[in-house]
Image 1 (cartoon, rainbow, N blue to C red):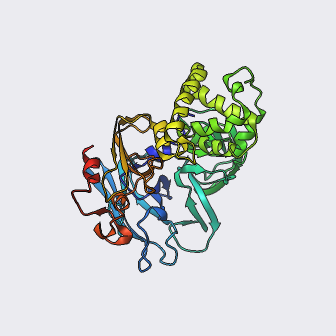
Image 2 (cartoon, rainbow, N blue to C red; image 1 turned 90 degrees about the vertical axis):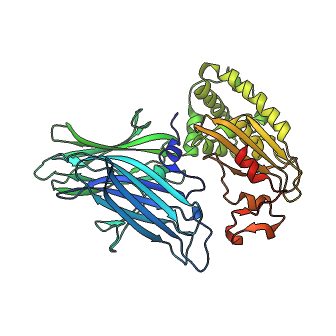
Image 3 (spheres, rainbow, N blue to C red; image 1 turned 135 degrees about the horizontal axis):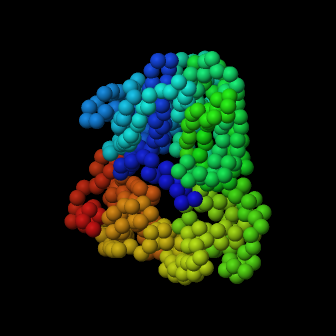
Amino acid sequence: MKHLFTLFFLAVSFQGWSIKASVDFLRFSNINQQYLEVNYRIFANSLSAPNPESDNEVLSTIMIYKGEDIVDFQKNMLVGSKSDSTKDLLDVRRFLLEPGSYKVVVELRDQRGKKQIFKVEKEIIIVPRALQSISDIMLLATVSQSDQESAMVRNGVYMEMLPYAYYGKESNVMNSYVEVYGMQGTDKYYCSYEIVQGYDSDPGSVEVIKYKRLDPIELKAYLLNLDISDLTSGNYHFVVKLYDNTKKVIGSSCINFVKVNPEADINQLSKRSDKIDNSFVHEIEVDSLDYYLKAIAPIVLEPKRSLLEELMENDNTIAKRRFIHEYWKETSGDNAEGASIAYMKIARAVDHNFFNGTSYGFDTDMGYIFLRYGKPDDAVVVDDELSAFPYQIWRYNKVLSTGENNVKFLFYAPSLSHRDYRLLHSTCRLEFQNPSWEAELYRKIPEEEVGNPTEVRSTNDGFTRRAKDLWNDF
């Protein structure tokens, strides 16, 4: 479980205030040549605020390097629907490539926003095609019959890739697309397609498996589907294996994915046979279980975070105790009880110190950040700027969970209450980032804002406006 959700934050390289996009690199073949497919989705809600008179526009640049040389290059403009600016932008680009090692660089640039850039690099190896082989696997979010001509349509089927290889709690079926090559003249060849617990680098037990007879033709596309409604939350990999008529594996393809399924998790926790009656969680009073769950929420990551939230809406006390017990056993091993006691001592202090009159202290932005990342290495409090709301800047020399250095958080109190600081901006890639934080901090003086009111990024410099200098120098 240690790799959960790293694909969201490590598989792509985000830049500050970036466009959010999901990119897949897939290798396919036609009869005589091999090609790379770059398949991506740009999330409309990450683009600049729409102007009623303009469309969403993103400039896409894809460069293919072999060593230091650029061997292929495509640049095109993706234009969204003016009638529906909330619709994501989708595109597919294909590159014919000879066997070899390549670096693929994808850059997406919002044409209407400042610093709205997404960039990702990927090393791709094209191997010589074997006589009988299989393509990469494409996980599908949408699949339907279509008679349209489009890069999104293959063999009369419209397909959209599944962003981030992530299945939420509403997803009950895994749909996938794969191509099999060189089966002409074969007899009784077949494939298995299965879901295995853990990523492919850390395989576990087979959860779901099916078999399919392969057609004896040169190139055949297959749409495969599996029921995933009973999968518990966690890391998995989906693998397709090709077998000859002697049951020998002659080819395979694999892809990692994440499943979040709180309902199945609760059912599993309730039915498990291991005893916790003598463990530390048995001592937690029933009416304190939700308090305990809320206290550990800042340090619980997806997909367990979704399960935690579901548990707090549920009356299943056995599942709640098991969740707490399992969390500390996974993170602290034999020291689970000691780690739990030490953490709750800190959580209660945070609850007391950051309590704002309506929410638990660990439910406030400051309490959440404190528990998630620890005590800041430095902090500055500013409450004497007449043109600004009271604000604080916290700095961490290093955030271990993300590997980032010199991470900063800016909190402000728009209600002017020193018990009600809210997160306005951060440099942490897992937390909220706001490119217009200056304009919000100094919105008492709108006449000082720089730029279009709908796209304000900063304010004019002034003796009583020190936040930018403090932020940069702190």
